[in-house]
Structures are given as C-alpha cells and as structure tokens.
Image (cartoon, rainbow, N blue to C red; front, top):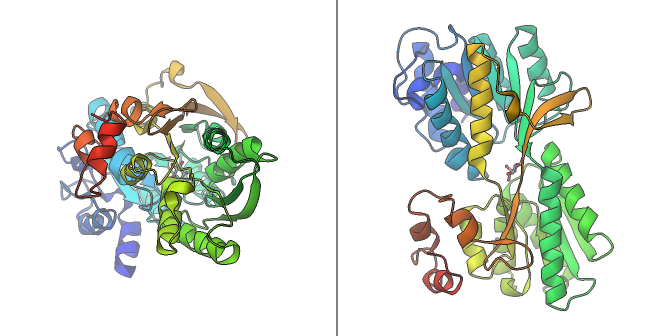
Length: 401
Ligand code: BGC
C-alpha cells in the first residue's frame, strides 16, 4: 500500500491516452509501472498503453482525479464515460487518471504530480473540498485550469468550472419519497435513523439540507450521524449502534445519503435479525446492488444520477480548455458560489426511482433499464438469480425486461 501510494503520487500523469484512446500518448517511463499499481488498486487497468516516450504533460494534458472506490460509480461510470468522451473529442491530448481511494493526502500528491508533470487541466473530484483549495491555488499559479467535478471545491482558490447535480434536490427527493411511503403505510411521526455523508464533502451537506427541509417536523429522528469518509462500514457501525440503543423495533425507517451507506445499514439490520422489508430506506447512485435490494423490497428508493452527461460535460470543457478553444457557452447553465466567487456551473437533474415508479418517482424499468445504466446486459445483471434467487420473479413483478 505504501509503495502504491507514494508511487502513485509520483506518477499521476503517467496513465496515458492509451487508457482512453488506445493510441498511447506518452509517459515518463519510470511512471508507467506506478500507474499500473494505481490502476490495479482502483480495479481497472489504467496503465494499459503506458510506456511511450515523451512526457505526458509536455504538450499539456488532462488529469482526471477521482476520490474513492467505495462508491461503484467512479470506476464503473465516471471514469469510462469521461475517457470515452475525451477519446472522441481530443484523442491526441495527453491524459492521466488517478483515484485517491478515499485519502485526501493521496489526492494531494496525485494532483501535485499532475501539476509538476505539466498538466494543463485538472478535473478534480475533491476527497476533501476545503483541503482541495490548496490544489487549485498551486494549479492557478501555473496557469492550470481546474474543473471541480461533482463536489464543489470551497477552500482557498476557486475552480474555473463546477459540474454536478442539483444536490439539495437529491436530498429533497430522498425525503419526499420516504415521507410518501411512510404516509402510505399509515406511519405518522415515524422514527427515522438518519445516516449522512462525509462532512468533508460539500455534497453531503446539501443532501442533508435537502432531506431535512422535507422531513423535519414530519418524522422523529431517533439517531443522526455521518459516515466520516463515505464508507459503507461506517454506516454499518452507525446502524449497529442505533439497533443496540433503540432495539429492533425502535425505528421505522432509515435515511441513508447514498447506496454505499444503505448497503452498510442493510448489513447491520440483517445481522441483527431486523426484517428489512418493514423498514423503508433511501439511497443514491442507483448502484446495481441497491437496485436489486429495491426489487427485493429491502430498500425503498434511490436517487438515480445519470453520470454520462456529467462526465461528458466535464470532458467537453476539459478538451476545450486543453486545446485552447472556447467551451460552448450553452453548456454552462448555472453559477454556484463557493464562498469566494460565483463559479460557472453545469448542474444536472437527479431522478427519484422505486421498483414500481409510485409516489412521483420513476420505475427501475423506465430509468436505469431504459438508459442501460449497467451496460447492454443491464437486465441480465439486475435479474441475476445467482445474486439472489428471488430476483427473476421480482423482475417479472416490476416489469424489468
Ligand atoms: C457523490 C455521490 C457519492 C458520494 C460518495 C458524493 O459526492 O455525489 O454520488 O455517493 O460522494 O462517494
């Protein structure tokens, strides 16, 4: 691990266009091996194609810096969607990829290496939104542009663009669907165990704010805590503690900020013999495991964010900035204040989903299946009897086909 992280820091720009375009743009050779380690840690072969000759940063390239492997989205969607788009738009521009695997210091190192290696554009999904201000300051000093990807960078200097979803709306959708379900079940002032996201992530504050704006006064919050680092096991511990103090019948529902957290809470309920089908739970990211839980009645709803348009907007801006062309003005549809300036922003709309599309949500069939969110074999992946013997019947019941 130690070697991997330190080498990754040195080699941030090492993962080359080969990873996205098949035609390797070049990398300092010492870095190529390190990028293999980084890629492997994130579960993907990022280094394929590495080993060409000139420095990747020499011509001015794009570095994509993602924060974590705890949520499936980063390796399964953000990264491949971003890479496909830059391959289409600016295939000759050097490209580097790093995943900080949940560590802000690792991300700092990776960003510093990208800057040292001459990147022209950083697309940064900040592990720590305040700490990342120093990365922007260092980048700006060298004329490097920074796109704040998915999470807003707040501390210190300001990014050039921000691309994300309406994150307060994410929380509102979670709260609204949960309240509708509890009301339909005849539960008034339902007792809710509440699990927020990482306080280091500006998004987490917005999800929390949005959900509270809907649920406060309508439910009884019997426990509220936060995953320190967005880790499922942190949510599992919070849920364990809640069950210990409240008892199995001491709560009616679970607010979880995302699917990783819902997975952790589900594990804790299951191991304590709680009937999860009687405890409606929220989530976010439409992870495959969560959508399967929803079909099986083990999670009530999810917030589906179409990652492709988000990643493609980032790639479009990054290619424009890297090649010195003016980004299409129509792409930028908003401004978000990061405490220092109004950052030109692209904000996308999140979608609430449930198994059957009730309570003002979309169904699984009309959302993730229609979009082939898990690839061309989405239905087979979702309805896989090997994952749970009940899935084929659940798919039939909810028209997943
Ligand atoms: C993202 C979510 C994700 C969470 C944990 C947030 O910033 O917007 O989609 O679940 O981070 O990685």
